[in-house]
Length: 362
Image 1 (cartoon, helix red, strand yellow):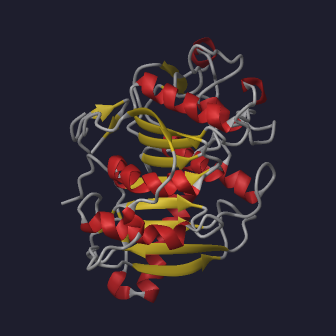
Image 2: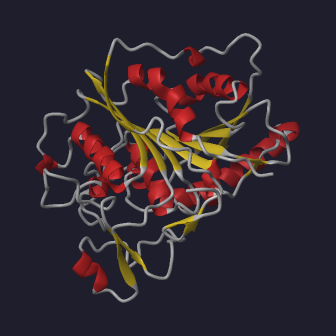
């Protein structure tokens, strides 16, 4: 796809950079942190602005959350900055402390654009029934809407107030917006782009929670497992939403409401709903980098339990690859859940691959 052409009803400002780096890979240790985790001599150091979000309209039960925004030295105030939104960004993984040096180095090397990185804290708790679970594991575009309407404007306001000489303005071009996360934060990162590719299109996930982790009353009772597989499980090939999905025949989805065309899981059920179309050919304009370990959570579990993270990530990669998406999947022998060894070894390569084809606004 060249810049300006359409894919499945979506136009794109990006160039298709080809298939270099695409594929499914089996890797093993020992793990070694990439040199980019140490800022190189003479490399310009970006600024980090920290603040809190005290309330939310979209997630009204969320407590105050911490946010950090990395602004590279190369960012020119007044220009429209590309952005990565990092889930659990100020929480337990230490992303907001470890990642800025990586971005400093890659930006200085011209391997990625001069982007702002937003490290967003989660809403608290974990798994089904928690605020974090509501935000991250819900299979919808609601979290993407929150990021677009509440999080990113809050970053613009905070940088203007705290460092007016580094005040940020974000691009509205979805090709210039990416997401990253581990575990449930990974599932959220993919959902942001899958349901709202009008807002986000570039995704990195580590041990993504593409498993069942939602209340059974949810529109998709097996949660993010539905992205790669539905019941009955078909060992020969993934049969979830990535493989084929129902959508409105009037055009791409631009709301975060779960609508009538979102939930049918077969062609017959889809076509029985007025205004819906069954999509087996037109891909969404996404780039997706995945990682998981052979010792990931539930790695020996059967598909019927919908909780095998290793299998779930394998099937995600297979589904995306079969459908013709740009996807890169690393499966690390011996690695555990959101294992920092593979993460620190591969993050610079992941970011470089993810942002290929992006063109900054003139």
